[in-house]
Amino acid sequence: MLPLLMGALGVAVVALAVVLVLQFVSGGSAPENPVPTAYETHDTGDEILATREVDSRPLSEGEIFGDAEEIDSSSQNVTFTLAESGLTEDCASAVWGEEVAAALADADCTQAARAGYTSGDYLGAAVMFNLRDQEAAQAVATALKPPKDPEAEPAGFITVPGADGELADLGAGYSAAEATVSGHYLTVTWVQATDSTDPAERESLVSPLIALSAFRDPLYNRVVQLETLQESQTTTTPVA
Image: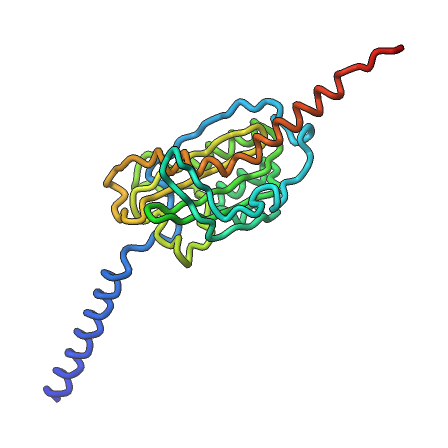
């Protein structure tokens, strides 16, 4: 029996060693429901987009993603390549956590445009929610805020598009997110350095956050279009 037991023990040791080696090689992956280490909210003050009544045209994939496969920010020296994208009416599928899903439902969310990005140095995710009005967008931004106590249970956050692929490590290390209210839209951008594995090791992520903020650019186009429309409607033609 002793030789058999020794042989079984040897197999177990080898198996454990293989698991440890694979974990070391593949690096740490994010927890099942990751949240950013740092989180901030902003308001662009785009009052012209304050309600969906005024800005009633739904988002489209062509408008949000177009043909561009990259977000190239020369000023920040960061180039993000689009890895995953999609537009859905099922807003709850873009988040995890019952409280956050409930906040989206209360905000009458009708669309969620999602994208996952990679670069040589960073991982990134972006989501744009189409909500009822500016107040609803602010409420969802608040609901997404992670608790200050790292031991406390988060209410939820956005899910990572393509989390089973290149973006699997987003949330495993030190990451930062920004929630930006643009009228009745809420855009959440989230970034992390590719080599970051410890959420406690702080680092500056200003450059990739600025670069990824270009995901909101289609909303600026809407502002210009609505302003032009309003100006044309208020302009009266002189009577000859």
